[in-house]
Length: 400
Ligand code: ADP
Ligand code: RBF
Ligand code: MG
Image 1 (cartoon, rainbow, N blue to C red):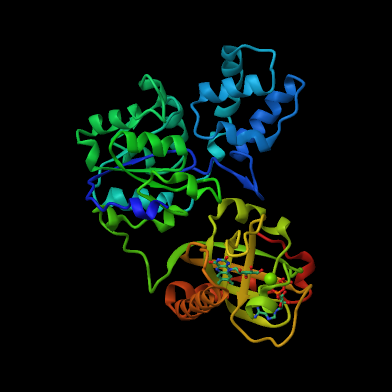
Image 2: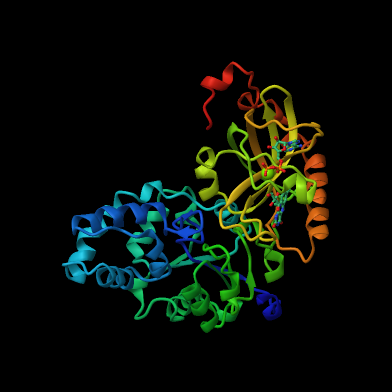
């Protein structure tokens, strides 16, 4: 895998892709990629106007393409009775109306703030036209000022996978391509960065496809796992005792049956919540091991460590949330209201050679969470009103 390609080399400039790398424009619904929620909705409505039905499972064909290429693919796939030009001119305003709703991916704001504060010059390089890029980033505070260079697909002859966009970005940054670090989610983007002679970290937005990104210098799960010191850049300084504080996120609902293997196979019970109660958490949170506080209606508030993702060891088809409450209850509590405040991140989900090594790692996560939750930055969330539910409140209690 990409590990063997790993060549440490100091870089001094960072070139970022936008869609799917900094912005959550790739939306995953269970195992299907439906591109981003917005593209999906816009295309669905548009294609309906032509009497056709949008099939989100085919959306992977347009990921990482220029808008013109994506348009050509869609017009052909759906046999739409319009020209390419008509398609583009009709659909473009539909997108403009939606851009204010696109959210940054976990770690985007952190990365941009960090590099800005250390004076590392940054460029944005995207296949989208420059005016679209500028419009999209205008909704995010501090982003416009952070990039000294923006190169759009309309400013070069050929978009990614051609290296042209990245070569142009280095030229405008006034540096040699070899001193640039590229961060990219798409395969065409990784190819383009390597062809340009740059170091490339891939953050695939499509799960379970890491193996395709062999040409990247490193493949990571999310921007939270980016270790800048590997590339000669100033390291993040916000990790505390093996944990990374995140913007707290609150989810809850009645405990339901899961895969039935937590306690049986691992000796680690995980209390599952109904999928509809946390669909936004599943789509917005990158997979990984997180921790926080758990409120259980009849029992009180407990420390909690959890995984979000596909549990690679078991190769699940669905993304799930698996919270393990760090307390010995001695019995099941199916049906009870469980409320979670997720406050920190520990590591990406991983595969393990043996069941024993998976179990040992989960216990280690438990110890990390146990210790971290006593730190002042995390301890305060124990008092979140959201967690304090009595049995009567459950009926009116609304998950946030
Ligand atoms: P399932 O696949 O149904 O989730 P598990 O074997 O993972 O089954 O067991 C989870 C169940 O065990 C929870 O739903 C809950 O009722 C119970 N349970 C008991 N102790 C704990 C704990 N410390 N953390 C999470 N769940 C627990
Ligand atoms: N499953 C994995 O396949 N890989 C992991 O790295 C992983 N990490 C976990 C960390 C924690 C704290 C917990 C509670 C579970 C983790 N699991 C992981 C999920 C475990 O496989 C899961 O609890 C069972 O699959 C439940 O059905
Ligand atoms: Mg479980």
